[in-house]
Image (cartoon, rainbow, N blue to C red; front, side):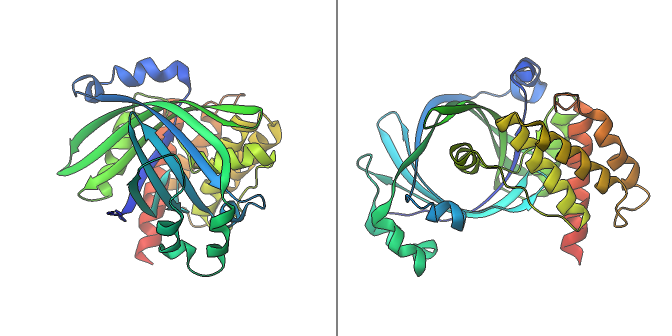
Length: 295
């Protein structure tokens, strides 16, 4: 058995279903061949949510006759960009490979005791369209996922675009996302499918605290994710407040402040972004991430 363990570097962008036609007619996607497949995914956790609390996800994914087991750690980043450890390998059936799990770093120590107690907690079933895009001397896998997250009697839709770096520099991800956002109303998303499902099951959407400018943008992004899944207007109010705090943050220079001030104006009353919102949010996230890396 071979277990692949790369560092996954990706940008996640959410969009409303009514904007799919605009996205799919974009010259970059329209001109490139794509693959389409249906993916059935089952996530596992203990009855006491040990994996969710440790921000680790264990998943079985079936595509046709192929079943792959995956382990992911929490993403580090914000503004849609994340990097995280990921391990995946093919398994013969829809049963957790407990022995292989026990050998992985996340399950060394206390979390190892959870392995024998793992049971299915949620499902994500979606159609995935994928493109391989050569952009600025980098290779980027772009995937569009449409489907739903189901846990217990609750469900929420999936409609998101992911840009994953396969070869090259992360700068190319930002550049491609900004190019798409010039025409398509996209918005950064910082919440994984597993985290969305866990919050839906618990009927609780925790939000991160914020001090720095990047943290305020992250808080606004997660609050928007929570609003669209929960329908609770409190989360939209928090997102708007976080964007207002971001706009006056002392870390912003004279170039970025007008960009931040634009964001609250580009969200509709229902939390839907204009194309200008997505472009401005991505520009801010890119610049703030670059400034953080230089410190």
